[in-house]
Amino acid sequence: PPPFNWEDPLNAKSLLTEEEIAISETTEAYCQERLLPRVLQAYRDEHYDKTILEEMGELGLLGATIKGYGCAGVSNVASGLITKAVERVDSGYRSGMSVQSSLVMGAIDMFGTKEHKDKFLPSMAKGKLLGAFGLTEPNHGSDPGAMEAVAKPHPTKKGYLSLSGSKTWITNSPIADVLLVWAKYHETGKIRGFLVERSQCPPGTLETPAIKNKNGLRASLTGMIHLDECPIPEANMFPDVEGLRGPFSCLNNARYGIAFGITGALEDAIARARTYALERKQFKGNPLAKYQLVQKKLADATTDAAFGTLAAIQVGRLKDMGEEAPEMISMIKRQNCDRALWNARVLQEIFGGNAASDEYAIGRHVANMYVTQTYEGQSDIHSLILGRAITGVQAFC
Ligand code: TGC
Ligand code: FAD
Image (tube, rainbow, N blue to C red; front, side):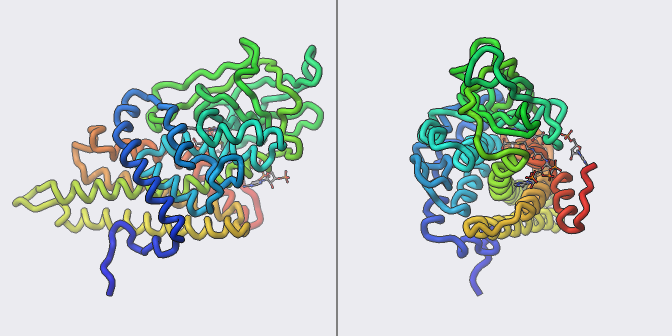
């Protein structure tokens, strides 16, 4: 029989095309050579180096599934492999990329006018123009349908709307040039998407303070968005999409990216725990790896990472054929993030006291994984989305 490969136990590689393997290898090489050496200091300093997005842009990693506008136009599976390579280093780096690619470029590609696409997508693909996605508000997280942000006719500027409201926990908001803000349109009360260009906002109408001292995702920048009667050209509103279908359609892609990407973070945790268990000796000079309880921890985590990867590839293939139901994405987002967090917390035990040192990276992954389980729909919310699809009865309220 062929040998067992603990790094790819179910031979997921056999399901990939030559092109997908090449994209994955190029991205892994960039991430290991260029991102890994800077993550420890970035995490300590709570610093996000925005040139990372430019580097990713040079490699064609941004908005990778979009066709045209300087984007690579690759398969959803290839795009998942990109997120996996980035998240193997740090979920925060994947977060900065996901927002740019799936949530802002993806939204413009799906719902923008030709003018929006021509204006924003090419420089966003190069990582020279940065995006943020503002859905969550201080009083409305899991229930964004109740949002308070509102767009009204501008009292003095013809052809402009006046946008007011606050968004919180917004990745990249402090550095974003274009902020996609979801708000209720005065005429209909329905949610619409607005492209807010920082350079066009008069002083005092747009503030994006950073949220400091986070416990996790410290290598990613997070902030708020405050809009105070900010004038926005009517032409900057997405013309044809209203209601939660707009933001949720973008979230389908981003949630898929997290589900695929988080398997990379878990695999890094496994590789580090395995190395540590082989090197660290306790009781008569035996490596920790010799003990059955330690082996079970590695077996559990490796199984979940392998199953999660296969499930993500399957949903990616269905996405490429346009046959994915949003609930499939809820299923893999919930399962892969939950299992990654559970397993990484158990693997953390293998490091003993050293797990408390950031040099071993395991604590960073665990803290990040809490966030991945929370944003883009907390896992219990995805349970309810699945429960609704299974029973036909909604249990949100
Ligand atoms: P509900 O009645 O379910 O749906 C309202 C309308 O939306 C449509 N819809 C979808 N469309 C496309 N894809 C989906 N997945 C969709 N889900 C729903 C639906 O068809 C309906 O359309 P219409 O035309 O009939 O109006 O709405 P609800 O208010 O009952 O929703 C409840 C719930 C819990 C499902 C939803 O609100 C939810 O998913 N909450 C979680 C919130 C969330 O995910 N927030 C994410 C914020 S962004 C973020 O976290 C980015 S982190 C980025 C990073 O750093 O990586
Ligand atoms: P709440 O909605 O208050 O939920 C708290 C808890 O209650 C959760 O466990 C939830 O599952 C549970 N709960 C809520 N309702 C129910 C119910 N009906 N039944 C059972 N349980 C329920 N948002 C953006 O828009 N853009 C971003 O770029 C972005 N980036 C983020 C980056 C970071 C680092 C973080 C931490 C968050 C980010 N978010 C972003 C926000 C994120 O999407 C929200 O935190 C998330 O949707 C949960 O909302 P909440 O924090 O308000 O929690």
